[in-house]
Length: 508
Image (cartoon, rainbow, N blue to C red; front, side):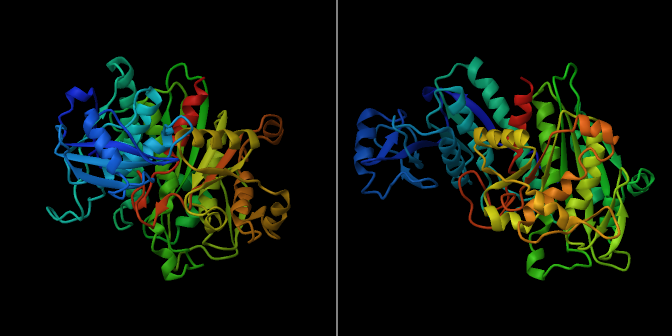
């Protein structure tokens, strides 16, 4: 379920490269395309650059051209990849390098080994090129017949040309490999069909994957959930023959400098329940557990990188199905911590399972709590399919957005207007799971905010509230269009890099 077949990343000098294909960058300069490489003999480089426009090479992002080896060059295959617009100094920024590396490696599927001779003369640039390669070399083939793989196998060995000594390059490549593995683990889980990924099997996969690591795992089954009052998770899952689960994963290093809690939505398939979705809207609902997969992968990566921060992850898993036992509109659930919720729409289920987990997470008094969810269609309406919406306490919200910018991911800060909260009022319970339709992404965040610290005494949570941020990844978590850069079709693994970077920043 979670494939371990990831590319091997190797730092090499130009003279040490053994791969048959070498990738070089072409930038879009003010006066035309410019070749950015010292991997070719001077005469060959000059001749190639003078021919770029004739060859139709523009240097645009995602542009990949294959050429036979040039005279004087020892590589049978030369690959030109676009870096986009160059800066004032004639260089490319880190994200441009990351995207170009990913696009090149992705396009070279079927080639066993590739050398990337992109600008990698600093640790930051090398990290970008290595991450792009690790993310671009991905394919999901778990359910294809033996020997019948659609498309070609991804690149298995990537040689990164860099002048940096091993003492500088090895830690960079190790981190890139861990990050790439974490992102691709999310992709593997999200791409797994709901016939095979359901709450119990998801929980089992997490336990199996973390066996032998220092990450602690606890799983609540339906009996334990009932005993401890997790009414939200149980209520959403009660219509399915496959009962819900709650999974807690923890990286707790000695001498941890901070404690960050993460909560992930893990709806393994969402029909909408009794409030049934139209058939076309169910086509990608196997991806509704991307938040939980992200939380699992981030904790796993934090442990592998030995980040000196305690990280607790809460994966709220349920399958939302219609049946004679399913939750009905107007039913009232008693949540973990005691709040009651009137469920007016069973298709607004993610916020309900996450509410239970937010209470449990903040009962442990972390320094900050962040939740990640494919929560609302309104996120796509507001921000499209590539930007994550970030809401919550202003300082933490802005910290998430800054971490996303540093990681090369797209996130946008959004408010939670106070006028939206009254729309969630219920005449029979503490709160309703449905409120104002317009601005629905922010209304859902207003609901979640009600459960941060909800299990703590009122005086305590008023005096020292837990900083909280909510990440709505409904659009960017699943790419229904063509692949681009290091992003494949289907599951993307968005926000893993952002959250790992934020946690590392908390280490001081």
